[in-house]
Image (cartoon, rainbow, N blue to C red; front, side, top):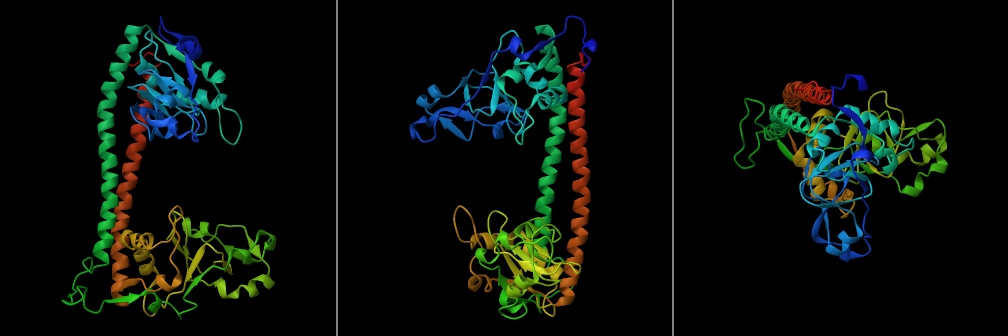
Amino acid sequence: MDKSILPPQWSWVKLGDVYKIETGNTPPKKEADNYGNYIPFIKPPQLLNCIVTNGEESLSKKGAEKGRVLPADSILVSCIGNLGKIGLNKVPVAFNQQINALVNNSKIHSRFTFYFCQSKNFRNQLENVASATTIPIVNKSKFSQLAIPLPPLPEQKKIVEKIEELFSGLDSGVASLKKAKEQIKLYRQSVLTSAFNGKLIGNVNFDEQTGLPKGWKLLPLKNIVVGDRGGLKRGPFGSSIKKSFFVESGYKVYEQGNAINDDPYRGKYFINEEKYKELEAFKVLPGDLIVSCSGVTLGRITEIPKDGLPGVINQALLRIRLNKKIISTKFFIMLFRSHFFQKRIFQNSQGSAMPNLVGLKDFKEIDLIVPPLNHQSQIVEEIKKRFSEANNLEKAIDESLQKSEALRQSILKQAFEGRLL
């Protein structure tokens, strides 16, 4: 920011000249009695450009003595990793070493500094002094050298009042837009629910016994794949595909990332023809589906396209080869990705810290709703049509949210150039 544009009686000052600056720390976790319900312990995830009153953890009185405690109305700034996340505490808090804090100063309006720290000017200063490492870091010394425009205290208060007046209407609009985005998510779920109970397409009669439209079937997964063994295949043991086997080019090794990102083209690992023939039982063909089998991305799925490279799946994947005379690929993928089917996968998963797909013996028995092929085609088209409308609306909402953020930054820019009043 050009210093010459500041109004009379304003000045640029360094944070270290007007604030006491503290860097947080974390009391040892191995000493369990450091943690309790005495004082909130703040970490960067709680800094969301808002008022901070609680953390995910709290310290005991003993832990607070070993930590760093901030008085109310201080400003917390994340300075390691995700730079520039801001919070203003309304109660005394402790904080960790990823945060530098500006201790409350009665000569400076806390909210004036709080809003300045949300501006692009401040963010740019942080990024410019950050260490050039994999994880950006702004230490206490560099942090203290950052500059802030400082008007007289009465004017600071008026500027804060004007910012909050303008932000009030802006925040209300943003809240409405975010609520609308959540409603779109619910709408998509509703569309899928209607699709797979027969209510999305017209001219269907329901069977009183099954509750499904006439002609629809409830079939186990093993009955809609090609063959009992080839249709569902887990990847080989980890020792079967080691990094030492990889070559610069050859047959592709499909990884969990392909399914997670719905991108069959990504990846850089290949095996030679000899290894490929050894692992032929795990090969993939165009039209095959591969599914992530572990972690929070359990159940992610993608299709191998016609131009997909010949290759094999690794140990973290499941291959599904559908019987196209019974079920279409597009219909199956939509059903598989639906929230209620994904819920079933996670409910039946193994492991606690890291969920894993149940064994094939159980997985192949999971029931799926299978309409006639002509109904499947209609359902796919109806879902695509409704999702396309929802996507367009979501895009418009995202554009409005971007404009709101641009307006917010415009307000802050004017405020700290002395042009808002």
